[in-house]
Image (cartoon, helix red, strand yellow):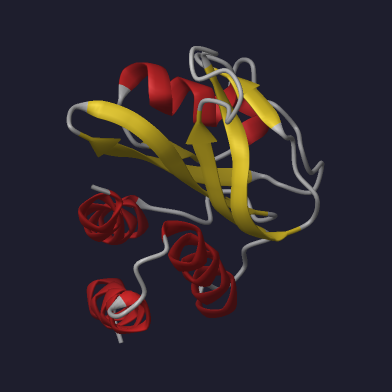
Amino acid sequence: MNKAEFYSELNSQIKALCDSEPNLIANLANISAVLFERLADINWAGFYVVGDSVDKSRQELVLGPFQGRAACVRIPFGRGVCGTAVSTQQSMLVEDVHDFDGHIACDAASRSEVVVPIVVNDVVVAVLDIDSPIESRFDKDDQLGLESLVTFIEEIWA
């Protein structure tokens, strides 16, 4: 099975899992679990959400549902791979995080990363973040597959 077929199947599985569940947190938790289970050679899969439940004006990401080792709780916009994805509203595909200026090392074992911003009504509301201990683990096919998943997440977020 090629990557396009894999992500099509993965996205179908996730859509079916979320189909009758209206709770966003439950859906994000299950999406994280499926990604962590189905994607090979990763060590973290989850979400960082924009803002804070107390102070919505803070310009930072806050840890959301995930699978993997304990993670950084807050990431300022423009900092690290996730914060850069928010600031640019662009997906980030990083072959070696040690070469990324300003990388935030939540897990020293991580070597590569793909981050896709989740945009609702032209505003980034969260990012999907996947880490791997293997350098160059992700490629454009992974990015496209995850961007397709994020399109679905944007629909259930709205």
